[in-house]
Amino acid sequence: MKSQLRPWVSWGLMASLLLAILSGLIISYPFREEIPLVSTAGLEGVIPFGALFRSFHYYTAQIAFLLLVWHTVEAILTRGYERRRFFYWVFLAGAYPLFVLILFTGYIIRGDETGLSAGRIAENLTYTLPYLGNLLNRLCFSVSEDGVHRAYLSHLFFSFGLLLVLSLWHFRLRRIKLEDLALWAVLALTLALIWPPSLEPPRYTLHIKGPWFFLGIQELLRYLPPFWAGIFIPLLPVTALIFFPKAPRTCLLGLVVWHLFYFIFLGRGLLR
Image 1 (cartoon, rainbow, N blue to C red):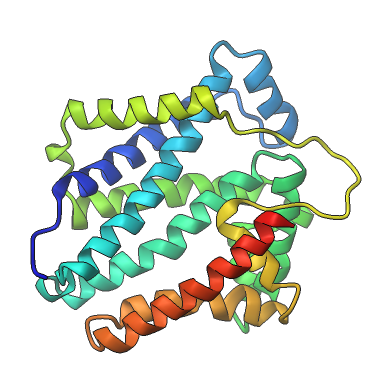
Image 2: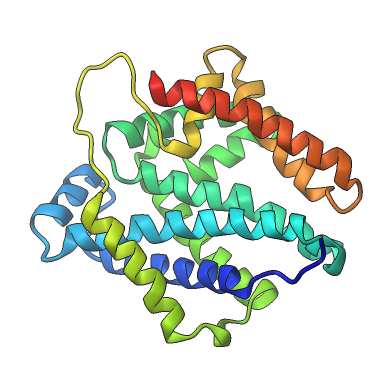
C-alpha cells in the first residue's frame, strides 16, 4: 500500500498546533504561576471569555496530538517511511515524547489537585532515570521545590520549539490556509462549548486520576517498579517507531502488542 499521505492531516496538525500556541499566549497574560489555581479559576470566572479561551487552548492541543498519531499511522500504512530520510523519521518519532511532555506540563500548571498530583508523580519518576533524572526534573518539573514554575517554562519553551522545528523541517507554514485554521478552530470551539475541561479543587481523596494519556502509566505503577512502569515501558513504542524503517515487521508487531496491553491498563484506569 503506497498511496500518498493525505495532506489535510499534516496541515490540520500544523494549524491546530498554531491555534493552541496563539490561544495559549492569550491566556498566559493574566496567568500568575505563583498562584496557579487561583489564576486559572480567575481566568474562568473573572476574565471575559477566559473560560472559552482556556477550553479552546485545551482542545486545539489535544486535536494536534491526535492528528500527530493519525499522521504517523498513515505514514506506516502507506510506507511513507520509505520515502523519508531516516533522520526525518527519527524526528517524527521523537516528537511524541516532546508532545506528551507539553500536554503533561499543561496539566500541571493548572494548579488543581489532578495537575499537582500528576506533577509530583512525574517528579518521582524522573529520579529513577539513571544519571539524567535529576537534571530532567530540574528542567521540567521540580514541583516540590518550585511549584509550577519549571513546568510553566517547559510548557512555553517546548511548545514554541516544537512549532519552530515542525515549520522548518517537516511542514511549510506558508501552505496553511485560512480555511484550514477556520476548520480546526470551529471543531475545537464546538468541543469547548460542549465539554469544557474541569478543575479539581484541593480535597482529601484516596484516588486521583491523571490525564487520559497518563492513566495507563498510572495503572502500571500499581504493579511494576517506577522505572519500569514510568520510564522503560513508555519508551518502548518510541524506540520501535524510531527503528521502524530498519525492521518494519518486527517493529509493527511490537507496536501492536504494546498498544494492546497498554489499552487494557488504560481501560482499567478509566473504570477505577
